[in-house]
Length: 72
Image 1 (cartoon, one colour):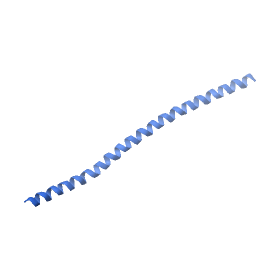
Image 2: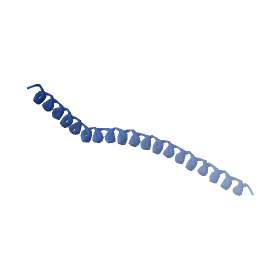
Image 3: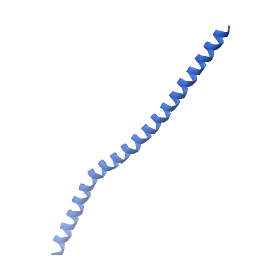
Image 4: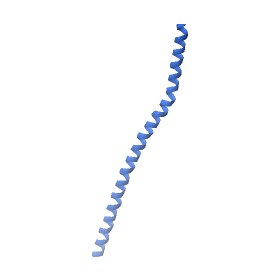
């Protein structure tokens, strides 16, 4: 009977350790996913800006050239 109680205590202790370890892993996984979301968001903004800026510059230079042409 005493060995069964000791076995149950050991099993519960191991279970608590495993659950604690899983909790830590979950915390680190959440932080990692959070980092990826922020990094991915910044990357997306940079890619979008690199796609939009040349179009805006081209439009601005077209406007500038047409204004220069009209002023002559």
